[in-house]
Image 1 (spheres, rainbow, N blue to C red):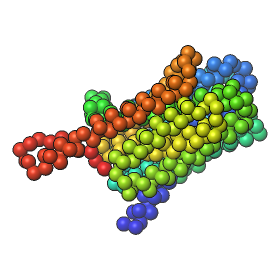
Image 2: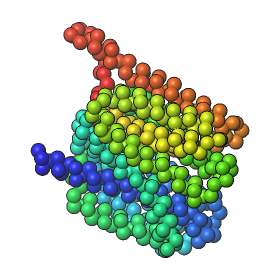
Image 3: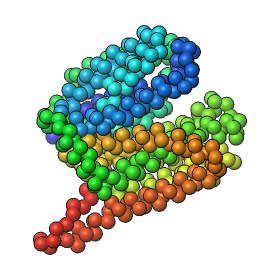
Image 4: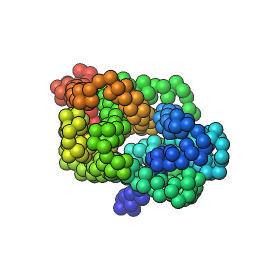
Length: 413
């Protein structure tokens, strides 16, 4: 048993580091956007397309690969994805044509898209109960390192070796991870080895949306990440226009949120063992709503208020992300790949929609009113979804001992 636990722990950190690399591949790109623009002689719009297409492909592939992982060997998907990442990264490093660069960047997204999905699904298979929640917390904690480290690493390498240096760096890390995963990633993870049938795959997603737990988690995750990206995209605007801060100082103000996200993940690891997930969800939603409300009422006149709201917001994201992952894998034991894939897709869509919709609203409305309304909306939505998810528990208790009465399955965890 002890040997099995050590093996599971090793695999946990292996998939965590692999997923960290996937996130790093996306976030490391931001500091070199001006280099891409100048090196290829293209417009800002074209460079932004190269950013958006990576996120879009990653989001879509969560659905495509989600049900594939329910039917096929995870390792048989992971290894080809890493090989594709290596080839695409080399292409990005050596090409001098922006169209080819865009194609290679798209292939890179295809290659890395499966990694976080396989990581979360593998964790769901290896661990049960509170240990699963603890492992999800570790996973999210490791992932939260990327937004802190990636811009620093990207800026340093880009400054020294221009944009090709970034992609040679990704290539080297990809080769190392390919070698380690080829040797140590366990066979048999998430594998039923069944033929892939579209009808059966669609039934998986239908079951997720019909489930009160599944649909509620998806709705909450969409809105939570909508709020998250709405705030972090609007933050530099208010700091430069309202407070006239330099971009260097603006970048430093992102660090409290990044570190508090890590702290929130650590907090979730330990609190979910001692408290029911229902309580963790309640307080996570309250902190999320409170952080947005505090930001709404202080961002125009107080840097201290902004900093506190960002810390609270990071804590909420750090708690809710592994919580949502744990709850949805608990609810769909036999369709973990599909469930995690849909969860990832929905939260990526929230990330994409947040800056667009909030930007439109902020162009025509008062920022305090808009963010205040968002905070109230999330609080009301969070409470409503909790009532919706846990309403059946009372019925289950009432049905105990009555063999003639058909009761619905209650919440797990």
